Image (cartoon, rainbow, N blue to C red; front, side, top):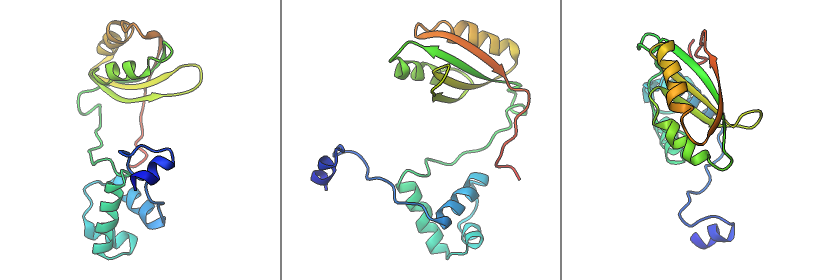
Length: 164
């Protein structure tokens, strides 16, 4: 197997590519995104497969890295994070990995993406209030040597698309 992977240009330590998803796999993923605590019994019933089949499919999705984990969807405002913003960053060329690690360490950083277009990085943050947001942008993010400029987009209202 390692020889086959190397012949295809892969590294011997890489995982094989995930298997293709079918309609049942996609239905299971939709259900688990909406309720990560759903029981095997309820998953099986909703997608019309046996419990053993549902269990095996979920384990395969985990093993293949399709499901990376399970977590809670948090209402940021009720959790004391009253201000949310998307911050766009222009960064020094080839500094993505360094910037990503610095942004991960920021309090309230929720999502970081390397993107194309007029800016390089899109960062979603949640903070206690606008004062904490201003402090985060002005003293933490703009102080990073690799950050050339930022633009802050305040979030006025959010809707979780997974909520019924």
